[in-house]
Image (cartoon, rainbow, N blue to C red; front, side):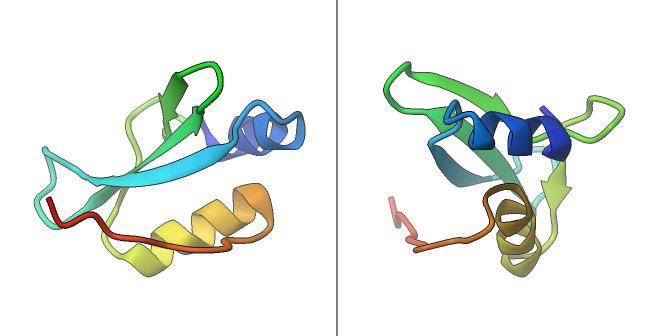
Length: 80
């Protein structure tokens, strides 16, 4: 799902959560996973060409999530 579609889904209440995981193909990079917890559905954020979008910094992740939702209210890190 690209940013424009993610913004649309967020505005419709379909996307309720954004998570961030390490990119297994790009060491040191991150992938954004958007989800609807109630429906147990998730989507990777993708480029316009349909490739999984990989972020080099957490600042870039936060900026993109803010572009989708308008804000980021908190951020947590799981150590396990």
